[in-house]
Image 1 (tube, rainbow, N blue to C red):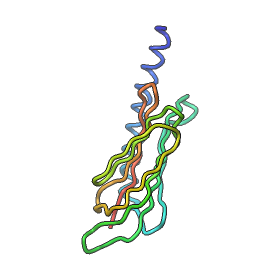
Image 2 (cartoon, rainbow, N blue to C red):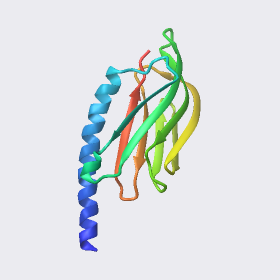
Image 3 (spheres, rainbow, N blue to C red):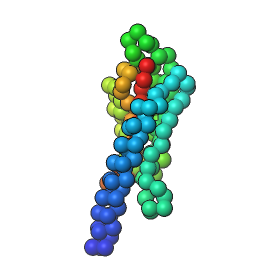
Image 4 (cartoon, rainbow, N blue to C red):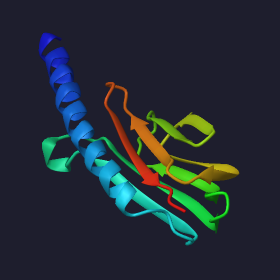
Length: 139
């Protein structure tokens, strides 16, 4: 039991460190590659499989109709996936937040979001590991 708890702690610490580095890199890349007027954009993030971690997350967002006058872009459906049957799945952005459990989930957002904000998704496993990725909105 002690060995199992120790492995969980090590996995959580290493997973958290990998997720933090990956989130920092993703944030820089997200701001460098803004959402465009395409139907679906997406990004994935997670620990490499060879480290023995299952945690990975992909988020996709339907975006269209940039408005340069008020610096907003319309967001339709947002999807998060790569979880397992008991994973906690989250999405959030400019004025919305949704959570559910499972392998994959999508939500109908149907709102305009401001330039400079992000659409983010997260997957959390039963051991407490959490992986986050974001898509930058630029108008």
